[in-house]
Amino acid sequence: MRKKALRIVAGALTAALALGAVAGCSTQGAPEPEDYQPLSVAYLNKAGYEDIIVGDHEGLFADAGPEITLNPVTGSGQQSVEALLSGAADIAATGQGPVGDAIKEHGDDIVVLAGSNCSTGGQVWVAGPNMVGEAAVIPYDKATDNKQEVKASFESAAAVLGGTVRVGVQKGATTESEFKSWLKKLDISFNDFGTVGDGTVALVDVKANVLPTTLASGTDIDMMAASQPYPDTALAQVEGAYKVGSNADIDSYGVACLVTTKAVFDEKADSIKAFLMADQKACEFMNAHPEEAVQICADSEGSSVESVQAAFDIADFKVQLSDQMIETILQTCEKKGAGITEGQLKAQMPLLDWLKDMK
Image 1 (cartoon, rainbow, N blue to C red):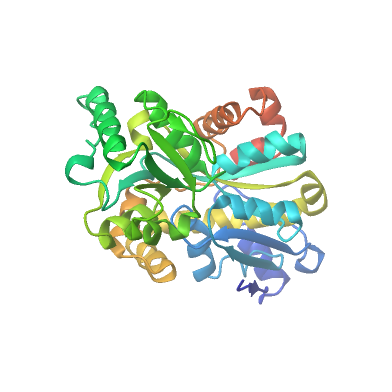
Image 2 (cartoon, rainbow, N blue to C red):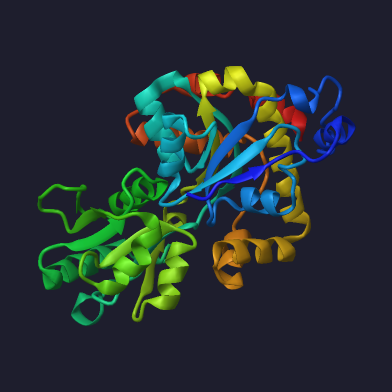
């Protein structure tokens, strides 16, 4: 795994001014650079992590104050959280699905620092080359709410394909819960990972980054469900692929989250705040210079400008914990069986009020 160490290159005064550059943030009381604890951040080089990609490119984390190391992982945000829990990273950038799983498993040891984006339509389901002709399914149309026709087409396709429609999705990723909610809305039955039953759909655990190539082979899965840019990659590269639906169909939002553990937060709170200030500057840069930011992300991700632009079109880049973000994380925790109340979740957000002042 490639590690990119970002070391501060400015003096104490420059670092203090950089911390205060975010609107509403004061440099008074900011630690000297040598007083900061180093931080490591696990993230993915893909859509949903644009703030970190752009912040890195623009040197904003290098000027934040603490020494910040960015550790790119592959797969989904689940791998970021695994890096956090193993001690390989201090902060995990992820979606709300892995956050819900982590809270279910580790309770209030998980600290939700902030969100950097909240949007809908970024989780997309794509049918592959097996699902044509008699095995084709009808895409869902929210305007006409054609769920009965979609359900019937899935049942017909399953019969043609040998009993089930095999859908690849990474277990534990945010997309898993989003896709399951979509199936439930359309009353499409499914067999969970590794189970056998009477479901129309069978879920197959496939890492998100290899879903397009797995779909193209047609041997292990018939459809895929993933966050961008993987669906757009499949649509562009897999002959016969077509979009079936997305989380926008169920008015569900995806939250790009930044989380840590209680132990790390207690030890490195000042460094974490400095990182979040720099991350907010990255968001402000993206909002002020969208074309440049899109090109930066496209070059970094190896994606097309059109694919990245589609992600930007639905994005709301801002480091915060909005009511929508909190509600989305809470709903995900409920779906995951975490058994947490809104009050308990907010108690695991120690920077909730600080973020409001940072804006």
